Length: 282
Ligand code: GLN
Image 1 (cartoon, rainbow, N blue to C red):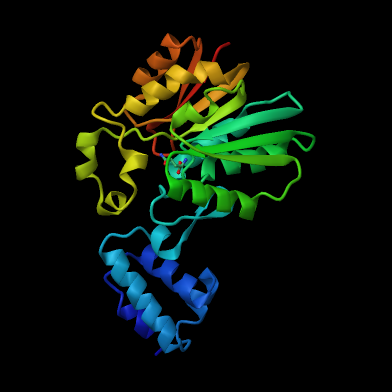
Image 2 (cartoon, rainbow, N blue to C red):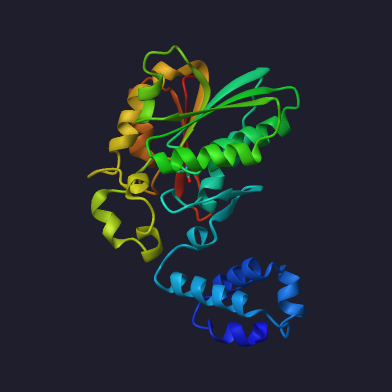
């Protein structure tokens, strides 16, 4: 069977999905896809393409079907059970990179790390921006699947001796409760969707772990608990970057203010929606 014949059998899928599936299974580049449309593909390649397409039709996100997904400059493994890295979340990392850090060594915490895409990207990109900087990266999540996933991603992507990685399994700041471990940078994408909104979300999002999405009745339950504990674990000149829902900017900034953070800033995503709150004491 030729590639174009196989593509006809999945013609009901959106073009982008089709291209991503075929490129992955047949190990082709974008250019190959155009040039080699009449290329013969093997029966096993065709079978895999059809089975991936079937999974896609039932709503499974491509990131779970392929087992990996791109975020910033890297590809992260993304098994079912961790949140799929989003382009909007890249804004958080971009905002971190816009800050200037003057210390020669910084300690970063990615709380609710999921795949680890935020913390790992921040550590890698900061290490590149500051060639003398030593980084301690802590990744933490309650979910065992997330713990396994970010541990693997960190091992796979971090090779610099200037970045030391520490992984934790636990609920919010629980694992740091009896330590005097303070962070210079806290990055976090906590679950923030109100419980009642979850059933109305896209089919693909419904496949993602509820634990990573559900922010309780108000959507702010995790965020509130997290912000309450942050002051015990942030250095005096530390900065927090928290991903939020499009309508939570003011509420979350107010929570930070109530916790003593004088400086708060709401940052928009590429779609023009409020997406990140940046907070610091001064
Ligand atoms: N930090 C991960 C991400 O942004 C996971 C977030 C979560 O599980 N709530 O993709």
